[in-house]
Amino acid sequence: MNISEFFRITPNNIVQCVNYIVTLKTLKSVKFLDEGFDNPDNFDLTLEYFLDEEEVNGFKTNYVDKHKLLSVQNVEELDNPYKWAEGIVLRTDDPYTELAEIVKYGSKEAYEASLPEYTDEFMLDVDVRVAMLEMGITE
Image (tube, rainbow, N blue to C red; front, top):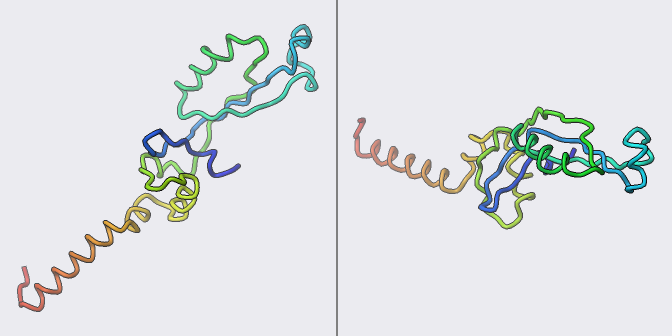
């Protein structure tokens, strides 16, 4: 599975984690309606990705149930190993390259610690502590 399939990016560049995969059967032609979904030569399988159970149910009732050529084969809840990345705001125009970099950190805390503003804040704190030590201030 490609790493990008574990995520969805909102229009304002916020990472959302995919938690469900729906395997969908799509009949190749209306002439197969009489035979149904029993013959594997009559349909194609496609995967759809969803954030939560509510989205899955909405997809079923608002889309699949209204089309004769569609049927849900399987609904699988993912054990998404990247749930910790939920809510991270992306900073570049290339979200999937940035996601690949973020995932390398292994945790949200490690990623946030690598950000320039965190590093600047840490260095400022270190500078203040060193200055206080040089002046003999211990509190």
